Image (cartoon, rainbow, N blue to C red; front, side, top):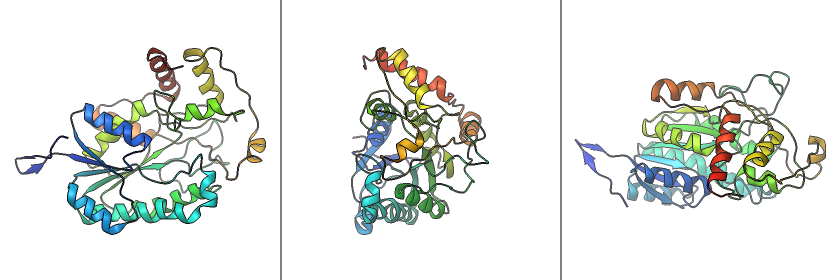
Length: 302
């Protein structure tokens, strides 16, 4: 484990990943290690204030990456029947960790969700996307309701960066990968959505963190892509014999306990920030998926 050092009286960055056994957390840890950065992980419960403060004072990180939270297993329907547990994690826990980091003078990057919107008259399918300042308009699931409400409070903290991911995708077929999920469904809806290709965006998350950026960013590749477009590219590059069936949103709603967010996020703020301040390019979502599936095929994923 790389040790935190002092250079000219300034601390070298030390990243502490909360929710350290999670899927995104593991990707972040591997990336930070590849970059030669000092990183540690923890599974301390966010709602346990004494334990959180003790962990922060023990590790003494310069940056916390919060990948913890409750999304439900196997999906967000779980949150409908476990509301108290969802609140403890997504509301009390997230706020507690952010507040403790503020008290200790530590920057925190919260990996949040963009599933707080749904298409409406002002933001129709094929039209403009939701920007960071647009009020949340989706509370069809208890999960989304907790996330949108805590964000409204959390954004006031001066040490806090909030990155809104949507339907994250990795270069493998991990069970948490959005692509893995839709390839296993008996039927899928065909609605365009914003997606987060981790290969493209996690390096940006690290850059924003180590430069102590704050505020809210729609953390997705630019544009929107439909389920059928994703699966067509998957079939083209990864699994040529893959077949799937569609059904309507009304038909889908009959088999789900909670509603699902469908929306396009406007990633202009993020793209502009990364390009102008860091010379970092984020590819459009269709291009990003094409590259992702080519990497999958090259790695022998089937």
